[in-house]
Length: 350
Image (cartoon, rainbow, N blue to C red; front, side, top):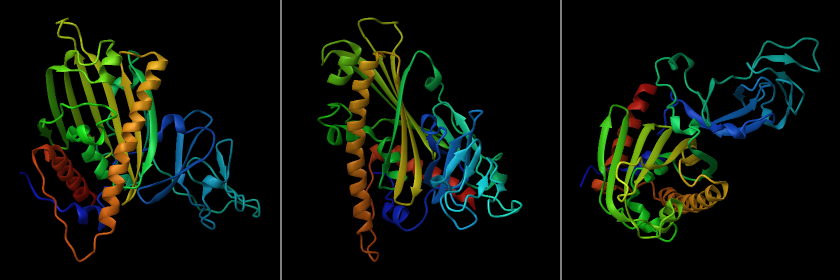
């Protein structure tokens, strides 16, 4: 057994996400020449792509009467509020008021953004802390031409840490995804290592029968013995990465077939999250094969969502006078370390 942690209070009673962190606001392919309104970290944000292709982000609140700017119009690189026509440039400056001779000296708050690979990252914290905070993690495979890439997003009515722990403990595969993935050998806790603000699990399976989905993608019969190695990394409070390398034992020395997944979890508020995911692999890259993979992945993520939302609902119904502790085991080691890392980020928030 490892530490007993009272998750009920941590996800129900107080904020458990740092503001001074780069968070994923959207997938890059979601942001275009229309206004995209989104709540992130209890903050209303409007995103749009400027005429030169750069992404801009403002507070989704007109400073005149608080109308959501995302309900307005994009004219060139200027947002026109849909209530009284006040206009704001990408820096948030009010540049025109139809009912006034001159634009007043007020602004909509601007948020720094960075577009890296498939993700649009946003900073909603203290701007003076940006240089002292780790930059958004980069995932080279997301821009590697050897990989076929797909992405998607969903909203989940649960605290973001529930999903972060879900993808750090794959022993749930044989239960939550029993009929979907049919992976039955995730029964032994993996090796876990940590380095400062990151944690990684690693599990190697030698000559294990391939589950049907794996076998189909690799072009061999289900149950064929192959080697595979799973790795998962907590890279920041915002991002985790999962890797699976497959090796054919009948062809030693040949490089592995590689599958990758990125999990970007951004709190909408304490009990809801935005989940943006990206998957890639350098085998079975034909469009129809990737379509099949995406279908299975979406089904699996829906199964995860059902469990996490049930946990969140259970927490919400807990009488406030009752303290409900957890009992953790070795398979929870990576998740417990992730909680401690997030707690250190929260301390730096001040």
